[in-house]
Length: 120
Image (tube, rainbow, N blue to C red; front, side, top):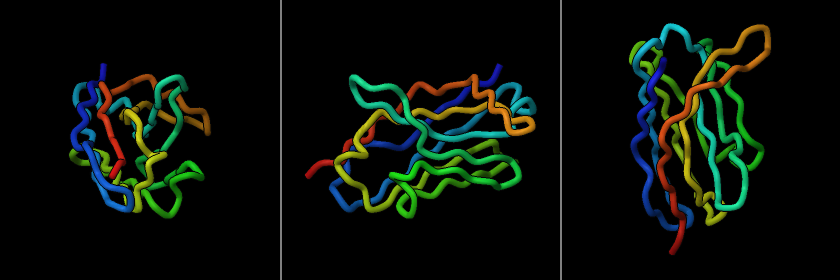
């Protein structure tokens, strides 16, 4: 099993920045991809960004150019740096992890979620 613990989040004004961090522990040798999803009430969870151990990144179109995902593989930590935040970015952000093999993703681990609110 792998445990994911998120930190960061909170209230920020439109146009501001925020940093989320997620640390993995447990059987981390079994994962090679980590990332972030988000969810607003009444909707399903949607991809924000993913990063594979080799540095390959994937972003949702809605956050490209504003958010940056990075990872410290030695510390098994993934960071989401969010900039130019908009009210539509308000959501619960979840860390997610798993493995990708031959292009097939199996992201079976979830964090507990952290609230991000963008409001003036």
